[in-house]
Structures are given as C-alpha cells and as structure tokens.
Length: 312
Image 1 (cartoon, rainbow, N blue to C red):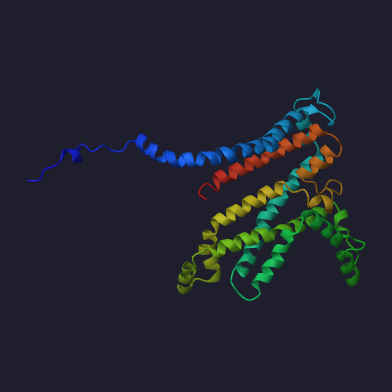
Image 2: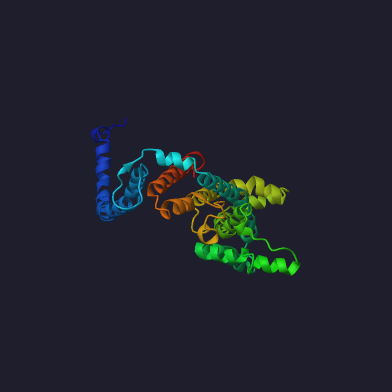
C-alpha cells in the first residue's frame, strides 16, 4: 500500500500575491528608466501637441488678428463663415480628390512596380533607387522643379509644344487643369514610398506557397489575386492609412507649385489655413480650419484603425 506524505498534500499553492511579488524585481529595474524618460516625453507632448490644440480650439471662438489677447468673442461664427466660403469647400473637395487618386492610382502603381522589382535580379537596385528618389527629394524642391516643367514660356512643356508645333499649354494658369497637374506631381512624389513598403512585404512572404500554387497550374494573375494580395493585406492597409493621412496634410508641395491658385482651384485645407488665416491675419478663422482638420484626421485615423487595422 502506498502512503501519501502530509507535505505533498498540504503543499501551499502559489497565490497571486506571491506571483506578483516575484515580478517586483523586474518592475523595480524598469522604474528608474520610466522615471527618467517618461516625464520629459510627456512634457514635450503636452507643450507641443496638447497645449497648441487647446489654444487653437480657444482661438477659433474669437475674431482675432494675432495681436494682443483675443477679446472679441464670436462663438461658432468662424465655423459658419468657414463652411460658407467657396474656397474652403473647394479645398475639402481637393483633399478628397487627392485621397481618391492616392488610393486608386498611386497605391496600385506602387504594387505593380514592387512586383517587378521585388526579385533579386541584375540592376534592380538601380531601378529601386530611381523610383524612390522623388520621395527623398524635398517637397519644396519638387514643387519648384515641377513649376518649371509646367511653365508655359520656358518649361519643358513649352519646349515640347514648340517641338511638335502646337500651342503651348499654360497648365498651372488654367483653373480646370491645375488640380490635375498637382495630382500628377503627388503621384510622382509619393509612390516610391509605398513601393518600398510593398517590396518589403513581398520579400517577407513564404515563397513555398507561391511555388506550390505555380506547380498546381495557377496563372500569374491567380497567384497575385488569391495568394500574394491577401498575404499583403496588412501592408496594403498600412499604405492606405499613410496615403489618407498624408493627403489631408498636403501643404509644402502645393505652395511652391501653385500657391493654391489659380482662383483657389488647388487649395487644400492646410494651404487655405495659411492663405486665409495666417497671411490675412485672420487667426480665429485659421484656428477654426485647424480644428476642422484635426477632427477629420482624428476621426479618419482612429476609425480606420478600429475598422480595418484592428487585427494588424
């Protein structure tokens, strides 16, 4: 007959308090690091993010030119004036158009080029560099370069028109064509960034899955549609997120290119804020634009991450 010792029966089980006590040493080691780095980060975030947002919301309730303290309280009048301004409505439409073009043109172009340049073949690094170079170029420099390209008197468009014997188009002076010229520059400037994201995603895929599909007789389009694209889902969602947020904040590329003209045809929300709020010393109206832009960005960012990126 076997006997059971009392010590094996009455052996105490580890409690939550004892397990938590066992983790205290690691927490104690991390505490000095938290105390050293967290307060400065919170302080900087509060000074440069939280306080400016609060001040912008406060200034948007006043009619103020930026001098002294705001005293003329107008409530929601700035927002009412804002949404009755045709230039601001045009800016909203342009931002929406830039988002649509970025998603439907820029990202598919980036995926197509990434599929071509993801393989390790001779010369592929050079082509990656060529396509990525516009993104490295400063936005102001890119705007000035393309302003010269579009120039109807001395630019490349003028030279090409004279060469083939047609009338020179003044693209940036045409209120119907200027926004499309800006869209072309936006696609050219930023598709290289998305291309590099997709190249990184493609290189991390399991090649055995694609090889198995090829052995089973799947065509190139079928492999892309049913294997590659689903496996790139997280990269596509991240790329779309960057495209949307970047499109809403587009400013320093447009200012040297068109300045928001002609006739406010290429205004975005940020260029409208600068041209109508800062330049014309209507700080209250400009703050209202900042509040609207902040609400749109936060709503889209958190809503998108909540709906589409919750599993990433």
